[in-house]
Length: 305
View 1 (spheres, rainbow, N blue to C red):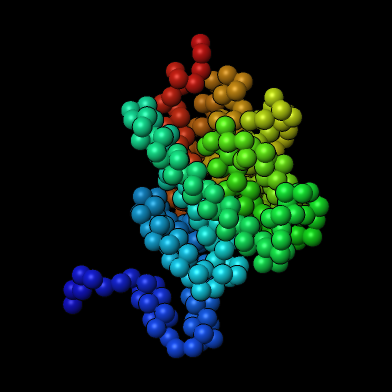
View 2: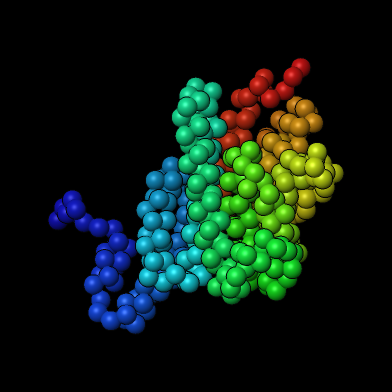
């Protein structure tokens, strides 16, 4: 029977939870739904339709935020919210801004500001997740980032990584924000601690971050040589399963060196990654390949003959 106003199953579950009597019963139910929702990222990761996933993500993120109001220290939800907001901000909002900039600068500017706010929201949830085990961490990071993170363990690597990504993403979209720029040592400390604890986490994603971090800061202490080293380590960790190491190196290093041939070679390697298998890298690789095709169409903009 057609029910035009029917809620999706998860929304129905949430609505029923809100009607449950008793704080303890309601809290238990919220945590159960939170546990289930925190695991949905794996289903998205193997999807072959980025547009479909992009349409679905906002509902999931808002549902997580609703559940976090009832269970504010649910680590799984805080991690899922942090990673979800970072991935949505980059893969669907910031990327769209880049794609439309040539034809609609005003729209691109609006999208980048929206992406910046989403990155900051991701940072907030990541910090909250870390503070479940380390109360007061946010203030401690401002005083001495390295010392503040010394007690973190391997189990904290995902939160360390996504918190750093949210922070760095917001920073990159507003380079003239002095408050955010002053936080660069915190971002680097978060990512370096994650790298120290688990170098090949998520098939080398932390090394990928340091490719762009080192190359983009070559005038203030970064190093193209270190970027290359992280690229090679990212490839070793990825074992041929990720397109992003090639894309990141092309955008961060090849453009800066004005090495057009290398740029094209890297992007062709990204496009050669097999996306036919429904594994947990499929969606990320499809997004990377979409961007790689766009970049190949911009050679005249990026390189001076």
